[in-house]
Length: 119
Image (cartoon, rainbow, N blue to C red; front, side, top):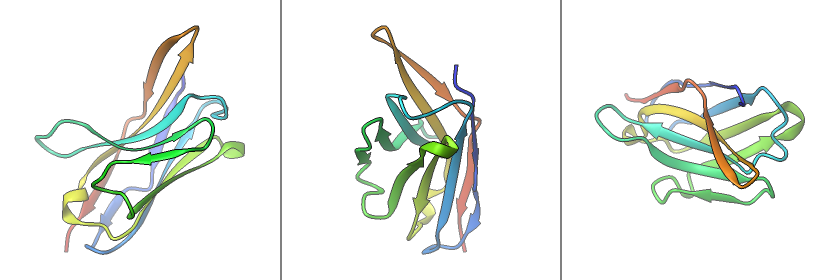
């Protein structure tokens, strides 16, 4: 199991920026994918962005062009740079590590960090 700790959330005005960090308890180089999800009050958890072990990235349409996912393997850390934030980005943001062991997928989650976009 990979232990994940998110940080970097907070209160920001619309149009502002935040950078979230997710520190893993082990080397993330060979992890199948590292993802960010978010969950707003009263809504289901939704996928936001992913970075694969090979370095390719994918984004939800709602954040494409505003958010950037990256990683620092030497620090076992994945980042989510969020720019041009909107009130609808308000949510608890979660980091997920997806591992593949003998063809079986395993998901490990962090505890989440709150992001509030409000004037």
